[in-house]
Amino acid sequence: MSTTPADTSPLSLTIVSATGSELPVTSLRDGRFDDLYRLQRCLAEVEKPFYAAFGEDEFVNEEGFRSLVDSGDTLIAIDGQKDDAIDSFVCVAPSVFARYYNAAVADIFIGVDSAQAKAGMFRKWIDIATAHARKLGYVTSLVQTFVTNVGAYNDLREAGYEFCAVLPTSGRLRGVGVTDTVLWRKYVVERNDFDFSVRRVPRDECWYFGSSRPRKPMELPRRYTLKNGTVVEMNNLQSEDVDAYCHLFVEATERGEGYTADETNPELTRHLLQNGNVGTCIFKTVDTSEVVAAGLLLPATFSRTTDPLVCGGAMVVRPDFASTGLGTLLMQVWPEMATSYGFDAVFGETFAKHTAVLHMSIKNGMRLIGCIPGTIKLPTDGWGDTILTYMQFGRYVKASKM
Ligand SMILES: CC(C)(COP(=O)(O)OP(=O)(O)OC[C@H]1O[C@@H](n2cnc3c(N)ncnc32)[C@H](O)[C@@H]1OP(=O)(O)O)[C@@H](O)C(=O)NCCC(=O)NCCS
Image 1 (spheres, rainbow, N blue to C red):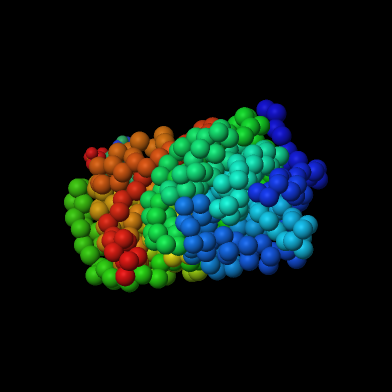
Image 2: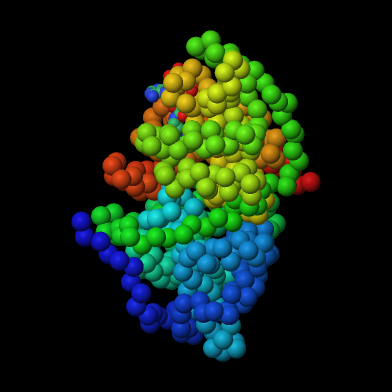
C-alpha cells in the first residue's frame, strides 16, 4: 500500500483580502496565539449572526481554543497595512468525529468576518484549508457551519463538499440563541494513501466543560427483572466497580464491537470519570453482584458551545447477557439520566456495520441525522462509516429565551 506522509515543506501562499490587498499566509507563529484568540472572540461576537464564523460562547474558555490550536495546524493571513494584524485564519485539526486518535479525518475551522465572507474570502480559505488538509496527510476534511449561514452552503458545494449531517442544538449564536449546525465533508486523498504512522492528537476540551443547566438527580438504585429472569440493580458507578466497568468496554472492543481501542483505553476512561463532566450507570446482578452492563454520558464532542446541550451516549452489555433487554433498558433511561446531568438531548455515533445497535436505537426513539464516511479504520475490517443518531427531550428553546 502506498502512503503519503505529511508534507512539512514551507508555505508560499497569499490570499486576496476583501479590500483587494494580497496578504501573505503563514503558519501561526509562537507568540501570536493571543492575537488569534482576540480575533476569534471578535468573530464570535458579531451582531449579524447569519455569517457568524463562531458561536457566541464557542471557545469562551481560552483553554478550549488553545487545545484546538495545539492539536491542529493553523494558517493566518497577515495584514501588513494594519500593523501585521491577523486578518483571517484557518485551523485544520484532527476531527472530533474520528473514532481513533490516529485521525484520517480533519475538522476545518475558518475564521473570516461577515464582510469578508461576502467578498469571497470564505470560499478562498476553503480551498486553502482543503489543500492544507491534503498536505498534512488527512483523507477527509469536515466543515461544520451554523444552519443560519446559508451563504456558506454554496461556497462549500462549489469547493466539492457534500452535505453529510445536521447536528441539532449544537451551538449558540448571538441574537439567535440555540441553533443547529450542518456538517459537510470532502475526500481530500484516496483512503489507501493514509499514513497510519503519523499519530495525531485529538482535541479534548469538550470533556472538561459540561452542562451548567439545572439537574434533576435520578432516584437510585432501581431494580429490573430481565428477560432471562435475572434481577439487576441500576446505580451510579461506585469506585469499587471502576475496573469491572472499564473491562466491559475493553472486552467489547476486543470482540470488534462498537468501539475502537483508543476509545475504550481504561486509562482514558478513568481520566474521564475523574475529570470530565460525565454521567455513569452500571447494572449489577442482585444475587451475585456482577457488573453486567454499563452506560456513559459525556458532553457531545461536536458541540460548538462551552455549555453543551447534547451528550453522547455509550453503552455495553456483557455478552452472556446479550438480548436480555439490558441495551433497551439503557436506551430507555437515557432521557432521564441525561436530564439528571443537565443535558437536553442524546447523540449516538454507531459503526454502520453495527446493525443491532442501529435497530435498537431507532426502535427506542433515536432518529437518523446523518452519516460520516471513513471515520473508522479497524485493523481487520478496513474503513468504516459512522451513522449519527439523535434524541431530544428537553426544552432548550424555552430555556434559551429566559
Ligand atoms: C449493542 C448492545 C448494547 C445491545 O444490548 P442487548 O442487551 O443485547 O440489547 P437488547 O436485549 O435490549 O436487544 C435490543 C434489540 O437488538 C437486538 N439484538 C441484540 N443483539 C443482536 C445481534 N447480535 N444481532 C441482531 N440483533 C440483535 C435484539 O433482538 C433486540 O431487538 P428487538 O427489541 O426487536 O427484540 C450489546 O450487544 C453490546 O454491548 N454490544 C457491544 C458494545 C456496543 O456495541 N455498544 C454500542 C456502541 S454504539
